[in-house]
Length: 148
Image (cartoon, rainbow, N blue to C red):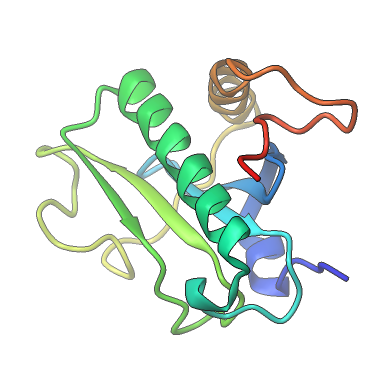
């Protein structure tokens, strides 16, 4: 049974579910920073997913990437699956700008996180969720169709 790692649960806000992944927003207003977590138990690496789930992960990540670059007018989008601190498979999607405070370095640990205000959190989540529904939600409220 899928259970979100406690560190991810502590650091994020849930935006919604794709057919495979849960979409989270890191509660750090320094960067628009999103995470996809496949809702599969005991998975640490992409290769451990079934082939069909691997394709679905790529579809969901690519769709999310297009939406984020469009909404935030990103100079660069960093997409990575690291898992050094949180072993559960999760894919970071971090919007970067040439004038952000960490550019061109990685964002991890350089500056203290700044939590979103309730209003800005609702705005970011609402804007992203609205564009992710370009795909017709299924009866379970999933944001995109399965590829397999």
